[in-house]
Image (tube, rainbow, N blue to C red):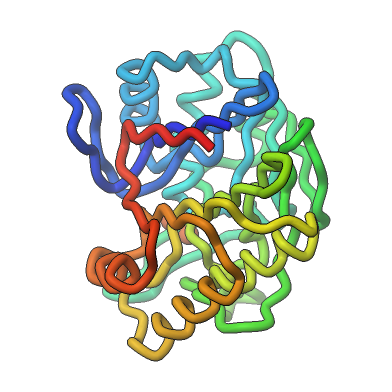
Length: 270
Ligand SMILES: [Fe+2]
Ligand SMILES: [Fe+2]
């Protein structure tokens, strides 16, 4: 498997790449290319793809980790750039209206309607269940929350705001044979829940856990619990970025061996 980071908060070490709040990665495995999430902004997504030598037309499928704008905002421009339609795998909850209330009310869900994206060629396959959608590419399905989770924002129900449990937060599990790689978008379900579900579903150890872990602002006790949990689950390598938080990343790196940071242009071979 090869993973290339296309969209991330930080761009590192190579000319022509743009950093922007959000996440997207290309996962190549078993001869297939899956785009995980689409970042916040279509022009940044397409610019980085171009700089990295990836064309929208060569992608076989899209996997969406959840319905926040910073993981879906690039979809429209991506679809417009392709000639053919494309299968999109996600949880049915991705199209809910979701808002943040801090500072001021703002929309944080997908900035497009389902119909709009379908008219541009998106073929949605939405399920809360785990499914192997391409050989070796498995959606975790809805994640059981046994430990803490890291939710954010509100849903609107009957004119009221209710806390959003981000039930649509799913992870991509890539079967590498003896072990699996797990890719999260924001990790709203909690990284320990995500890691346990991947192990439970596949019966295989996690060679690498990659993505945003949504630990920004987390208390030290929670970070220590995450570190202890990841150690006891024997997660091989950790690649953290996006909403992990810089201080929180440094805290993890000082205590967990084999921890790396994500940035646009990073390529991992597993
Ligand atoms: Fe995010
Ligand atoms: Fe998110």
